[in-house]
Length: 210
Image (cartoon, rainbow, N blue to C red; front, side, top):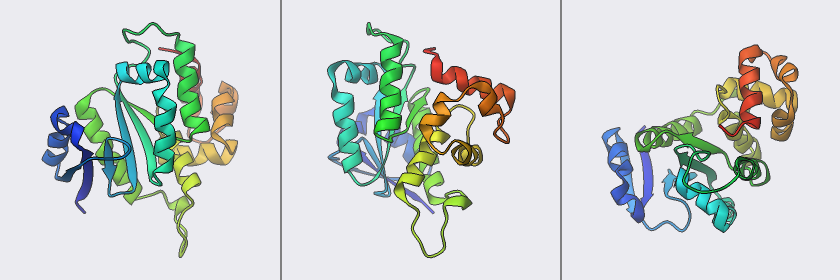
């Protein structure tokens, strides 16, 4: 099925809509009240460069944007292009990590890092594919999956090396995203399919600014 993506008018010159169109995606332009891209009117994506992401932390825009994303009624996602820990802004790594945790835990909005515009285009398409083909565990015959459950799953999938299957197993074992983040290496390692290497990588990811 062909994906339909609505792009905000301000994104016309970014090059991403052209990249999406080249990948058999139907792109429509209009002024969006919130976010930069909408996927089938179900997923809203806020795209930020690493510089803009950090600036939005400094001037307070980030959390007001999170509020708008949550009020949109669509599944929210923030894509950050580049490394927010390596920008021209003078800000402590702890402040950035605190903001990332707040967005993920308090606002329940996943933040995915992208290497650049082409990677962002690929992520937009992948987000659509994941949404259209959800994991078996959240399919309920005759019932619509709960949004909170789906959103938690999206957040955990954003962790390094974690796909749909491992995200499901982590949430089964730890129950909440917060408990996953607070877990030590040995606890993470006990989850089937994680292993010591992946557990160590996750542990360091939650506690390192690089």
